[in-house]
Length: 319
Image 1 (cartoon, rainbow, N blue to C red):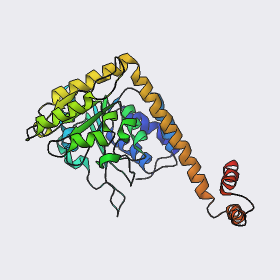
Image 2 (cartoon, one colour):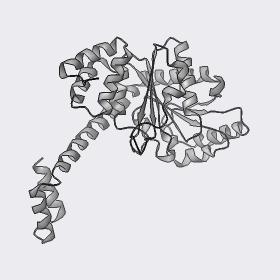
Image 3 (cartoon, helix red, strand yellow):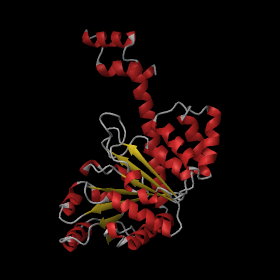
Image 4 (cartoon, helix red, strand yellow):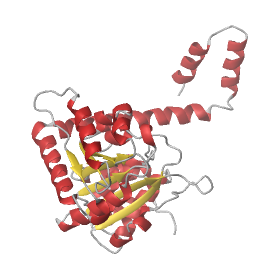
């Protein structure tokens, strides 16, 4: 299929807003592929965003994130919500694509017009998220999704970046995996808005809950601040999902009523703008790698006529 031209972007956005899956998929592909039209896509999407509630799911590998995501989709659809799912999977070292597609894992929802599921490759990004995730979230927001579930790759202690993109962050744990101890080590306490002990039918579930409750009780919080609840689930049997959705709804209400929702989203955009600016600088500097002037500056540093910081200032001044 031919790549869309500049005049086609507005049409794709309009089709995405009408809920057409093919248009949504093409827009996300433009984002992932770093299309030259990315700026036009972003500009066309921005006026139609800001309504979707982004729910991030994070946790160590094996806690059941994909199963919980699929169960949440069913619970949210039961309430009449239109749902988007972005599942960021490990990158194939051969193709650069996602190794485990959640479109396969969530096949029960594949024919539901009210659900859009997309697997994205992390492409080596250590925070558990693809660099393209913010723009892909914007596509699903503009496409009319009430809730967007963002499931991260599952890379242990480095997987805290999700909180920078989500309105509500669910931290999943499971009995018998030492997750209560991990929670106190990995910065998870700071990012969790709702803690979910999945596989709660296993031995040790109540012990994990007590340990987590004890650790959470030691955290200092301002008066009126949200106190993260602990929800017990067996996602494979849809148990505890109504309680989980209720807690997500309560957290959304708290964010809206306290004004924290706008603060979180503003901080999110600040980080995104900064990241785009830094990426632009990085690429421009990279374009100078074979430039004669850069070679001359390196020679000046080698000869002691200048220093690396002054040379770098010269490079930046000419960008």
